[in-house]
Length: 124
Image 1 (cartoon, rainbow, N blue to C red):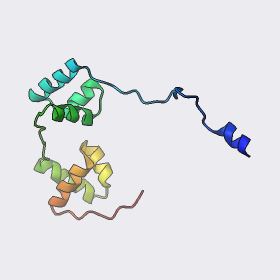
Image 2: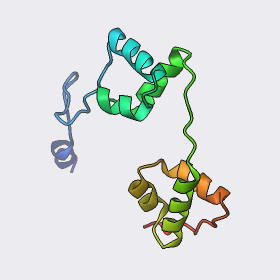
Image 3: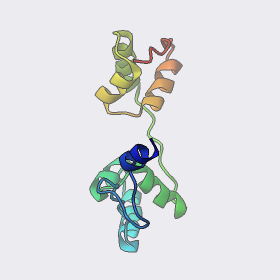
Image 4: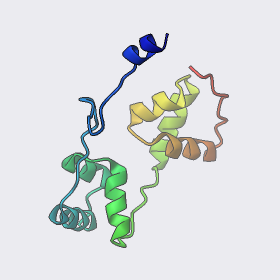
């Protein structure tokens, strides 16, 4: 039994890595400086993340580490109305957020603030 378990286990020697390991993108100091300048010039953190091939949280981390005030983009009343309409039509929070290309938690808080009652989670 031990031999079977040992032979079937994913055993690697020290220093050996798997081929599916995530590729991490490190931004150079020049790229970090450019991110800060572009953000201050008005580009969004989402656009910068796409441009540099990193996560939005990476961009926000760079900005905060350099004491740049991060802008908050509140949803417009039209966006909240559309989100509430879609949610009330039966779509899930995830589906509405995906369709409107917005953060699910931001959308959830906004539509709750507009008086919409959130349905219990289905776990689907």
